[in-house]
Amino acid sequence: MELRGEGGGVRDAELLSESARYLRTGVAPPLRADNWTRFKSFIDRINRRQWETLSDAVQSRVNYNQRELSLYEFTQLLKQEFAPKTNTTMAIVTTVGGDATVDGPVITRLCVKTSLVEGPRLPSAPRQHFEHSRHMVAYFTDNKISQVYDISDAAEKQTLCQAIVPPPALRPPPPPASIDLRQFYADYIACINSGSITDDLHRFCKPSGVTWNGTPMSVQKYGEMIQSSLDAISGLYFDIHTLAVDEGRQQLAARLEFTGTPVKSFAGGAPNGRSVEFSEHVFYWLEQGLISDVLSIVDWEEYRSQLAR
Picture 1: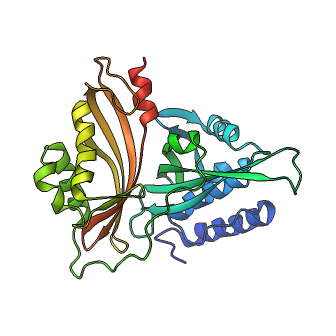
Picture 2: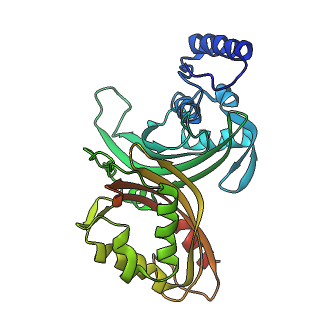
């Protein structure tokens, strides 16, 4: 187990405390001290409805989607969604960041699974199973979650989606010469912001195309999709708020924050002359140093709500 510079006596006491808590609550103690494991423990506590132990994973005050909440308020918010009798759980699909090498924020794709019973709640009663994707960005202070940005796929929830898009499988090995993924991504976003998608996007994407949210696209079609948002929202600017990279898996994840003024009807919102601010949580997979797969959730609900005010 890697202690990463923590005091041995303090860490030993923490491990004993975690072991005792596991015997009492059934929440497994962390196997290693990193933010990925701390986030997983947070999800485990929610799934088990172990609300009394959230204080072990979350600070006494937490910033949730830019709202300052006490731990009690944050817990009540979670309880509304994960009530004792609801069959709703979250499974971690993929995560970037927060490991022992780069102990920073964690960006996670979650699958929210809900099972609805038809008729009386009996073991033999028929059930319907639905899923929707959820992307969280969690930040930590003193080994506990202190800030969370959380976006769910509203379309999947509304259409009662039965299965979310899985991450790509059977990835090829990384290129022999590694690239600076942070600089690569900064250059990719600069290409979009500078309006040079037509000329330069091919430098960042796999020649055979990109699979976006499960839909294969040529590089041209992928560029046209991005360009459509730039045409509908004047001055649309992509700001990299948070970026996490995994060199070994050739994977990136980011929180992007957008600003601009809508000039065309787009994503269910009609322009009203006002500027908007909204965000996206997005995962990228690379092959030989080029983007091959993208899984994205844009907070279109927030976008539409600003236009409706």
